[in-house]
Amino acid sequence: MSRVAQLDAIALDSELYGQFWSEFNAAVNTDGHKEEWELVMNSLVFVCATRFLSQHGSSHTYGSALSGVAFRCRKRTLYVVTVLAGYVWRKITHFVFNGSRGRSQMAWLKLYKWLNVAYHGCGVTNFVRFLAADGVGARSFLSPVYRMFNVYSTRLVRGGSASASDFYSGSVFAGLEYQNRQLLWNALLELFSKTLLTKRGLLPFAKRPQRVRSGTASQTVCPHCERFPTNPYQIACCRANYCYVCVVKALEWSLCDACGASKALTAAPVY
Image (cartoon, rainbow, N blue to C red; front, side, top):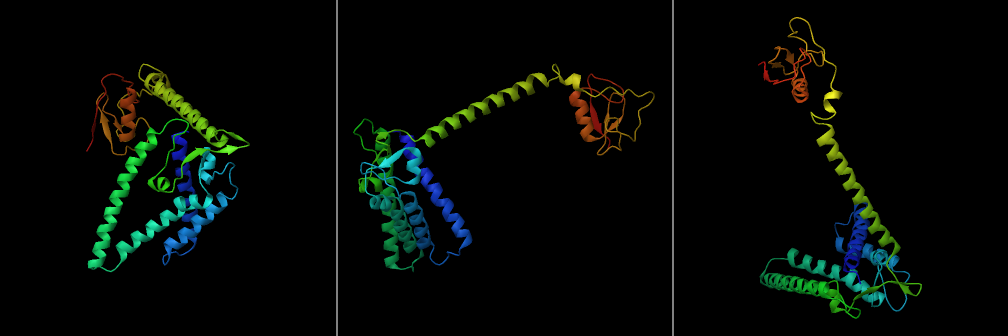
């Protein structure tokens, strides 16, 4: 049983619940009973996603069905561990941190912190056992809550055979193909920028035609853009005044548009 597929199932379900909740929360004012409204929305999504049960006594969520994962339990048990458990924990957190401050409230706060530390410690241990679970009969639990209710993962059965989801397999192969194309494109751009667009490559042939001016270069017209110099810089070869942007191009290309010089070009601000 693929561990990555099991973790992807949880991620897909969380994204689905979050998307529906964000849309609903944007349209309806849920400040008074936020946890209850969120429970209603998550329950609605769960019922719609698990309306059709899999064979052989297994249940699945929308995300697990896409990932080719099912759970050996009843649908009501899966609802408790995926939806109801989160609601209960949010209500406990709301009660502990938003209640009136007093001796009893501080005792509840200490108990909450202890339970939180204990649960996360069990979560680390469970995750290590989840990674170590191997073999045909090995049971992997996605969280301590799943282990408490004995909800373990198995392959989703469709048509009498257990096979990976076509959607999940297609998504994985599509992602790998996209990454390969992206790497190839990045390599081509790197080759193009470091070989063809260097001074020894095609860049000198793409330079603008030399416009060698006879006599003294004009001090009021930029020889590159032929406009009044903006933030003027004076080039040392013929003392022509360039715009700052234009002199940067001239120095980068090693070509002076005023006199045609191409070696040891330098420039300094006029003022």
